[in-house]
Length: 407
Image (tube, rainbow, N blue to C red; front, top):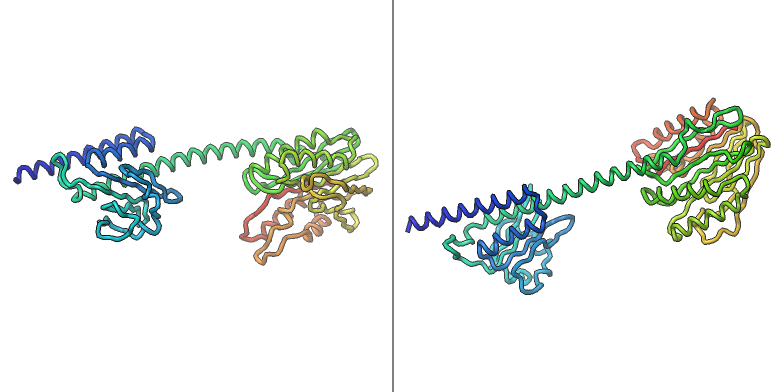
């Protein structure tokens, strides 16, 4: 008898080693999750004679990875959180009275550092098969085997997620580079005896929904704008890139600002189906006549400093572009610009940044700095430094753009 018992133990030990080796080789061969589960199912049902097996695994939520030998769908009523999480050890279910677990004999929990990763339910266990010792005595092997399978599946998932995240990172980097081509480089903006322009841009994410532009309409006129699309991220950046293309195509020295706004409103409505809108400040400036014509489409009003301690916020305009199917009333305004006047255009991400007391940054500091700073480059630098000091440890919640012009 001792010889037969020793032979059985040897057979079972060899079987366990071969099973674990087979699973390990399959993992090294990078077999699919489905293929790994099929090998797992074969070992448990065909090789060890287990009639029923159900495997639950946690991946953001509890999911059933495998249900084999089940004649109905009653196992779908099992709620891991209430029915299985209380089990911390391998447990015989036949003495319990949970109707949802009826038909199963054993529950095997799989933990990683006290955190539950999976649960295995076994049923219809054959006590003797092909000279192998009773399975019920070797449940730790099931636990080890399941642990290896679950960890391998989790590693495959994490690897796939890392690949996807890297792919997304590359796409975001490409989108950032593409967007940088749409927004003028501060070093390429005009800086001559007629007009001096500089800017600042800081997206909240890799890409943003802010946009500003400045270009010559003819030898005497320049056009410029600053805009902000509702929402953030890639979708906002795509909408804004389309807006940039439309503005560049439509904004000429001949088109009245009212008609330009109407055309842009129609395009944004068509592209976003009314789900997004864009606030924008758009202006024309004649270098010879020193006339500034503008329209404010729902944007935070730019700060105009006339050079003699007088401030004006440019508000005349209409609702945001894309807010309404049609913009019936578009008001424009025209002002005469004295020498050494300055205009500060910005997006709401600048003035709405909060300090620890939930107070917004506002425009008071800009009013002081635009008077005192000798250059607009130094003005922008001082404003950004003040914003960083003002917000303390509070994070930026939106894109920040500034377009500053000295006439």
